[in-house]
Length: 320
Image (cartoon, rainbow, N blue to C red; front, top):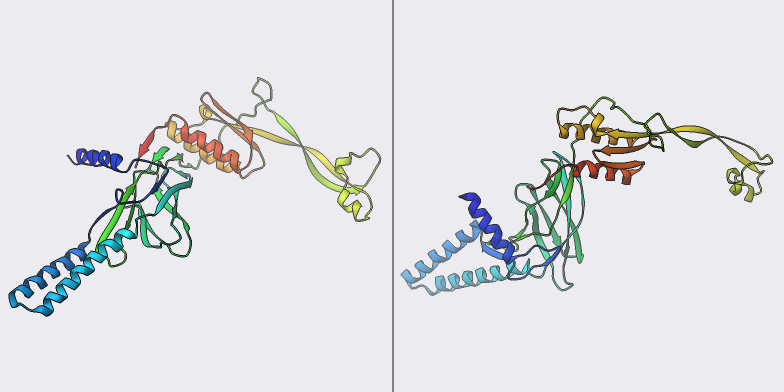
């Protein structure tokens, strides 16, 4: 029963506030309702009105009507603290399964308006409070738990405010088409079997030649021009040459088929840990994942490409 009600409510929200990458809040997208303090305030108004009618006291009448007018002002002020605000999604920071993914929102205001004490986030994930008074744009980071590997599509994000009096709560639910790939959770493992593949078709021990600096000596005839210290020579110093020796640089391949593990998720977690370790070493590493291959390389960009492949491999999307 509860699931059916929730499904109908989400369908109604999709019609009223359609998903979009950028949304400007207006009366169609903002809901408002008294808070607990607002209901107490409203009950006090009723008590004052009953007292004024019972005793025919003009002073109590005046007080009751003044407080009622203040309540109307609170409705307009609370609504205005969200109305006109522009919200759009920005880049995000992927995370590992069991950790948190960081999503970023950009709030933008018009120069003549200020927005104070606005909370944003997912109620069960934690809310973040922000204000736009001095700057026209503000970047807000929201954190969402990632329970499993795959494509995480969080539910609608909540924006709410009770500013300025706390008597009413204005809120909205926004679907900004946010999503993020969640990497496998790294699993500490012993060294994995490594394939060192030749440039040809055979799989065997293979190395790449790499020049390694060893010494600086006086220039000799027939020295390669690219090894000469031209900057020092330009400063009227003797012509010197850098010496290099050829070293061996291993191309490491990580292969899911050779990785131990009880199931696919465990094997991917071990590959994730191995990739993080190899990224800290001076080796070129690649990945073989079923029919997918990522050529050996190094650097942070290559690491994220490899982790993204691990996240996508035989995965499903889910909402949380």
